[in-house]
Structure formats: structure tokens, C-alpha cells
Image (cartoon, rainbow, N blue to C red):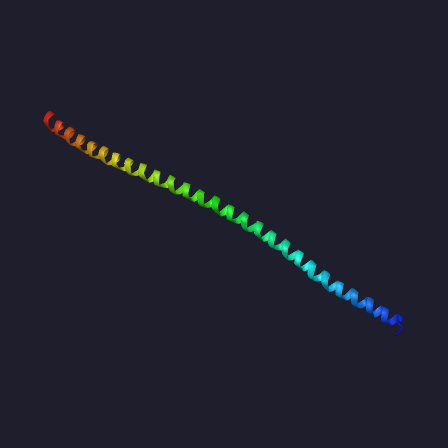
Length: 100
């Protein structure tokens, strides 16, 4: 059996084809790995950002609770002042009636 030029070209073409397919699969694997790593990094950043926001909301809730408590105390003080003012007006009115 003699090897002809056409057979040699066919064999080399087949080897190149097989290598090409192997390179395509290898390249696809590398790209998939890079994509996975990029997605993992993005997820980590998003998780970190969400945790930061969660802590911020918790801080805001505590501040709101504190302000609500302070507002309730202020409302109680205002009610006492209004009652005291009302009582003082009654006493002043009674003094006015006496002095006439």
C-alpha cells in the first residue's frame, strides 16, 4: 500500500479537524469557568450590598423606635401642661370675679 498525496492530505485534515473540535471544547470549558467565576463574584457583591442595606434598615428601625418613645413622652408632657394651663385659667377667672 502506497501513501498518496490525497491520503496524506485527508489524514492531516482529519487530525486538524479532531484538534479543532478539542480546542472548541477546551475553549468552551475555559469560558464557562470564567463566566461562573464572574457570576460568583457578582453574587458575593450583591450579598454584601444586601447585608449592608439590611443593617441600615435595622439602624433606621431602632432610631424610629427611639423617636416614637420620645414623642410619646413629649405628648404626655404637653397634656400635663395643657391641663395645668386650663386649671390656671380657671383660678384666674375666679380671682377676676372676686376683684370686681
